[in-house]
Amino acid sequence: MIRSTLCAMIVLSALPAAAQHAHHGSGGPKETGQSAFAAITEIVQILSSDPDTDWAKVNIQALRDHLVDMELVTTEANVRTQSEGRTVEFNVTGAGDVADVIKRMVLAHLPMLEMATGWAVTAEPSANGAIMVIEADTDQELARVLGLGFFGIMTIGAHHQAHHLQMATGIDPHH
Image (cartoon, rainbow, N blue to C red; front, top):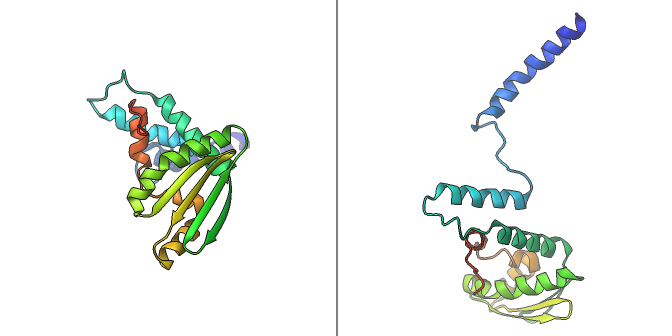
């Protein structure tokens, strides 16, 4: 009797929370999980709600591969930063596959970074990754470049969402 009463109390006390989470309203979860999964979920929702989606061209695997690349650069790359005057050099390196990913991502990001900031930016592949050089015009720009560091710099341009949608729909945004 005590056990069944205790079980009933536990179940009844959980009902308000379960009811709240059953609705997609204010109290329920919004995050779809790990960040790559969440990015893929967002793109699939966009594609699914667009009646003009050409499903024959959709390539979620390409998006997933890119998200893996982003993860590797963010978590596995090593960055050595040097500055002289208003010039900042990021020597970005990694082992094995990470070096190849660094090369692809740094070189692909270069035109978007220049367009978004107006900075003079160069990049070239190196044996274990890539070297990115940014010429700041002012001391304030220099402080921004140094404050953001390589990883902050790679986020500039808010192009990633559109970039992900292009990949998923079979468009190669790098060409």
